[in-house]
Image (cartoon, rainbow, N blue to C red; front, side):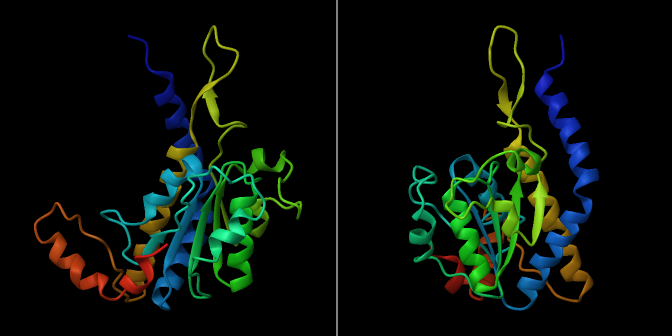
Length: 235
């Protein structure tokens, strides 16, 4: 049986990500380690399908306790509407000691751009996950004329093709099968790994979640979450 082309595409993408994003991953890991060691937390945001990447780094087993998702109640419906990010951020607490990850493949829509603006105004560090070359070809839908990557302290480039869909199929006029979700997950999980290793190397015990489905996991979580619950359990 002929091999499924999606696996081939993803394997090639992961190899290119590992090589091309090595230094960026390290820089992003340093921002996360610095934030948590100085009393801040990691926050992540993604609108629409990018939400799948945002939850990779918050609230899951093997991840950091000091992490939360900035939730978009509309799930991307209003991401093209200018002002939507400003309204959302009225209800979100970001502190200068925090680090925020924003995931947007195009980086052109007002919602993530306005969140980025607010993060930078506050003085927190910003990691952007985007398709860099694709984004550079686009025009911003925000009146500032700026794209999301322009606000980043560190850019993690997911190397996705323009429009995200990567596989041509005979008989179809368009490509299918996006790669940005898998690429973002790989970039963010590898960044968390380096951040944890950095904290340990500096003599700091990182607050890592143990699965509630592992014996003792719930009890361990109850103790650790006492330190962070005032920051992670709200919008």
